[in-house]
Image (cartoon, rainbow, N blue to C red; front, side, top):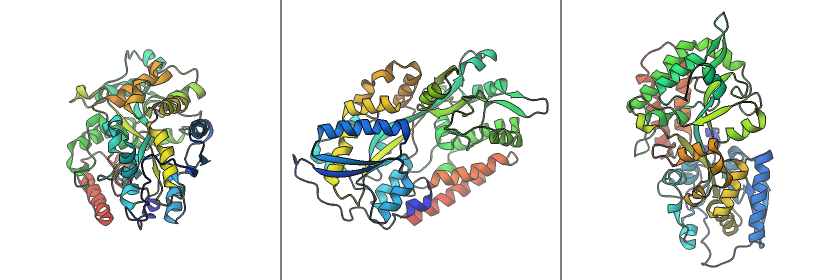
Length: 431
């Protein structure tokens, strides 16, 4: 998402034009406009759940607009328009949504209706509020782990997926296949930041890297875990050769198409979310794949089992014409166990409440998917913290890493401290 789009709503202030909640027991009615970003199969799943909601709430009509991304939604809210209910694909925007007031504070509705937030796992609670302001509720979760091609690992004599970063690097080298001129024909693991889901946020849990200090300033330059991750990554990039990796990456298919490199056997191992299972079974039926937690730091083998969690978040726009009916829809979608389980099974995402996790339906009987349910519940699983600058702190690090991985090996300490300065300037401007 463009940072400029986030800044478009900066003129809002929390609490601005927020209507008082209705008395307990008041039945919501009227029309709700609901924007979400899903398309195709997943949009059809949303329609199914909305139909269930309308059957249970006949006085509320829901107008659904699919394919609406965060940029469109933020621009509409900034212009005084926008939906009653908005669904965002990125938890990274929550800090900005809450701090700017683009989404209403849901606390009055939650307290009035006695919603038990303890039924939302702690990590998920952390990415749906900012500085005590809960402007969002979780709408399923994405959990990131590790995918491997069982056939290719067996051919290379590798009995099990790697559990540490050293094992990952060793396996990557064994699985890599080159042409006589050194050109990469198959990568055991493609370590470039920016390739598909290979991002610093998804790999940070492998080394326990910290993003922000308690005061919201950057911790990247002072946390040695980032240096550990970058050294491991750069050593593997240099083994392949950056130019060779770039040439190979340029030849690969789109991540979301049937030409995905893992689908085609061009990459033997990769980091990805639980949703990849459905894509593989639909687009690459002949690929024998396995799922596992992320490999972790050699110094902390006890961390194995964890990963990265994020998810969709949903809120009531400050421009909502019918906030009571909007909240009724959100409450149903995010706290009704039957609705959550049904939707999770339709979309193939991880349920986002403890009750739904305890009864995940068919997902719990799927051995590959259960790996992600276990990752979601693991104590070392983490997420990126909300910030008033939205995803800008991740973008600043990613921009630096693009330059770092392309250059000669060296100590990135100074570069990471410069990233700190950039982030802290943004935090100061955001107030």
